[in-house]
Image (tube, rainbow, N blue to C red; front, side, top):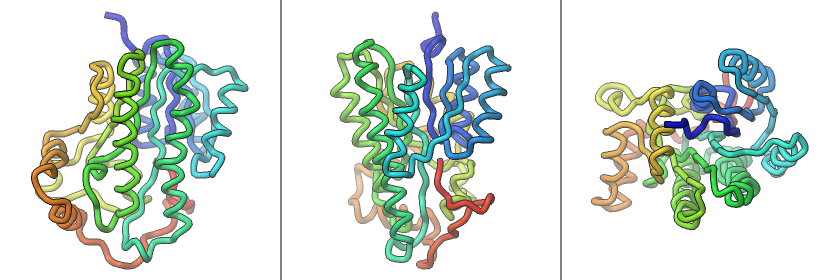
Length: 282
C-alpha cells in the first residue's frame, strides 16, 4: 500500500525540538518533504540538512516567531513567496506556564494565547482552502490531555488546549466530506524541553506510567491520522484519565488535576530557558 505521506509536503511548527523534531524525523523517513518552522534558525537548518541527506527528501528551514501578532501571516506569506504548497500542517508550536494565574506575567500569558490559539488558527485558515481544493491533505493540531478539563496551576495553558481540541473536532466535522483530515493530538506528559520551559515537571512514582516518549507519541499519531481518527490520546493511562472526566463534576476533576501536577507554589515560574531565552516554542 502507498504511504499516505510519501511525495507530500508537511509544514511542522515548533520543529527544532521535542515532538516537532520527532514529527520531522518520522515524516522524512516516510518520504515526505518538509518545511520546518521555529524561532531557532541554526537548529532548524541543521535538522533540515540532516534529514534531506539521510532520506533524499527536500527540507526547507523557515525561521518564524509565531508568538508575534503577525507571525503566522508572515510565515504563510513566505510560503507563498517560495511557492511551497503544504499538504499536511502539523501545528505543534506552543508553550505553557505553571503557577498561580494572578502571579504569572500578563504579557507572557497573552503571548501564550496568541501562539497556542491565534497562530494555530491563522495557519489553518490560510492553508485549508488549497487542501480543500485538492480534496486531500490535513491538519494535525497538538492539544493536550489538559484540554479535557480545567487545570489549576496551569489555567491558561489548559484553556488554550481546550480551544485547540474543540476547534479540531469542529473542523473535522465541517470537512468530513472534503477529503481533508483533521486530528487533535492530546498527549499527556512527554519528556521534552516543554517541562523546563513551563516550570512543570515529569510525574514521578505511580504517575510515571502516564509518560509516553516523543517517538512513540508521533508514531501513534501518524497511524491515527492515516486511519482518519479525529482525537488521539497516546497511552492507556492518559486515555482513561481524559475520558474519565466525563463521569465526575468539573470541580472534582480540577482538584484531581491540581493534585496531579503537585499543587505548584503561588509564585511566578522561571522566565528563562536553558539558552537564556524566554520559554516560548513547543
